[in-house]
Every structure is written in C-alpha cells, then in structure tokens.
Image (cartoon, rainbow, N blue to C red; front, top):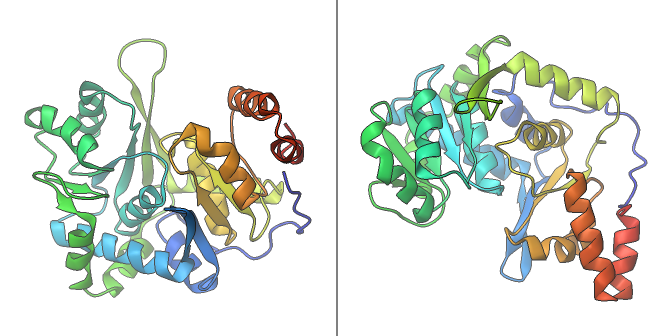
Length: 305
C-alpha cells in the first residue's frame, strides 16, 4: 500500500456532530474529490461540492416527506456512494440512520426496520425493495421507500426525492443540522449478540465524533488520503473510516461490488488506506500470488500483503 507522509491532521471540517459534517466538508473541501467509483470501464469522480448538493437535496426531500428530528430512516444497501449520500442526508435532516445489511433476509430486514420504528427506508435496487415488499404489512411505521438505483413498485426513485428536495429552501437543512445536539442519537447499529434477534446499539453523535477525533490524533488517516472501501457500511468500522475520510477531505473509492474485482481496482486507484479483515487479506494474497502475474504480485507487496 502506498504510504502517506502527510503530518497529523490539522485541516478538518470542525464539525460538532455528524449532522453538520457534510455541509461543512462541502464548503471546506469544495473542489476536492469525495467519491470515486467504477462507471463502465472508467472511474467517475464526484467533488465535495457536488456531494454536498446531493445530500442537501436528499435531506430536503425527506423533510418534504415529513421526516421530523429524531425520526429513524433505514438504509438497506451495499457499500456504494449512494449509501453515503443517503446516510448523510438522513443525518443532515436531523434523522437517525439505521443500517441494514444488504445480505439480510426479508424477515431480518423486517426485524431491524420494525424494531427501530423506521419511518423511511432507502433500498439499493428493486431486489432489495422486493424484500421489504414481502414484509411491508408487518411494518406499520414505514411510510415510504426510496430506491437508490433504477425503479421499483411502490418506491420513490432517488431522482424524484431529490426533485422534491429542490423545491424547498436549503436553509432548512442548515437549521436542522445545527439543531442536532452531541448527545442526540446518530445511528442504531444492530449487532447479533449471543442470543435472540440482533440488538440495536444506540450511538450518539458525540460518540462517533469523539472516536473520529481520536483516530485523527493517532494519524489513522491523513488529510486528503484515498481510502478503498468495500466493507459493509452497516458495520461500525467501515462507517468510522468513512467519517474520518470525509472529516479530513479525503477521497473514498467505492468498490464495484464484485469480490473478484478488488485486486484490479486496488491496482487502479492505489489507495493510501485499505480497511479490511485478516481473512480478506489472505484471500487477496492467495488470489494474487497464485496468478503468477508479476505486476499483481508487486501490487500485493506494496499493499503489505
């Protein structure tokens, strides 16, 4: 992995909560690339200013749908830029983010969405919407589903939600974000525990903001670092890395969704940081070294594998 020689972080958003982080990042790091991802054979890039606009429109769209401060909104989606857009949109509007693993069954999705009393749910595509459709009659609190890619029956498209948002004053989002207090809940992360169904762990804005600051003090990431992210954002670790990167004006390279594409994508983007788990490092190492490709072996060596 390429090493970053940048000094300890000094230029951050200065956010007090996660709710105001993206708005501040969009102002401070405006023309820097926030997100990059495969689109066909090319890597698309989205600046902080552009992401700030997207997040603001999503937040205003949710407000237009009736989201009130403290309301829960679930995100059922794999790791991709739209997950981040939706999550920051929920937070900016004063809502609470409830991640759901994209591999969950309809019944598991129903438990998380129902137990959290989520009023709104972002689903990645029609297949994820279909899961919720199977259990919709068991979710009395759920008022609307937003599909992030394409269209799906009984779901609002992301474009339609953003269009609704553009009809409202952007100042509403600033007011909502500034009204969020550090002790307010930021996210409910459901963990399996040892018995029974997953338990919702309530994490406050101050909790995540404090951990982000501690990681920056330890130089876990540096200003402007590029992070390759494939771990599920429904997990606390991946979410933490995302927040650190945004707070420092870094770039997140979102994987293309195919495990076999991880090594080629790493070679393409050359990240400074690859958050992962040991087993995945082992799999990548085996895949690379068994190929006999000198270029891939060299890349694996650079990644510290």
